[in-house]
Image (cartoon, helix red, strand yellow):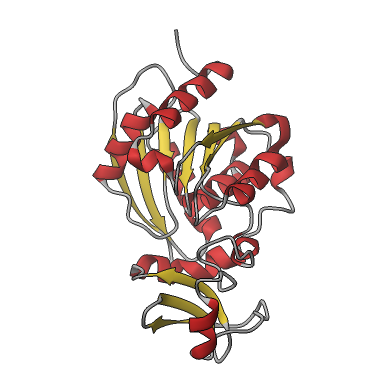
Length: 262
């Protein structure tokens, strides 16, 4: 199965590099392209490249940059797109002027094992309902998964005939359901420190989905190639509400790395 590709463009040039964004499951359309154009003050390209693996998606996104004859761009990875951002920098470093990792961590499974993450079965909010539904217990870390609906909780990813792996309050779209096995398997920790691409790592101080200390692990692994930006009072993906500190922080990052034309 080859990755299917859709492209949406937005924003206007302000002297900085073109910004690309993608997500493993969500369909980024014209609205996302325009939103990111406002936040980044740049031309934007949102690429939907859904395939069998994150590697296939990243390679399809890079093929799109080549097809569009664009110079190295900035890949802005929001939430699940942050996994793609890390992988893109690992597989195609020469294609990137910089990378932005926003509200993402280097290993999703490690975050789900932490009770401070609202998606974790270990969260105090879910322990009793999961126990009553027979979905509590230690995750064996391997084996097929399935989605179940749990009244009063939301959507639960469980090992088949086993415990919960992830809890999503409310409903979950079909794209994320399909992408979750790839996200659960993603672990950038063995190679992330070798990435040399300039990076801006953004975290919301009050993010319940990607707690700050998990996002900071990306920054720490990248070392002096990374700029750390904490949005005080920010939740999950602060750029989605056009937070002014994201806008100013990104522009300062471009200036720091001389990525803005005079």
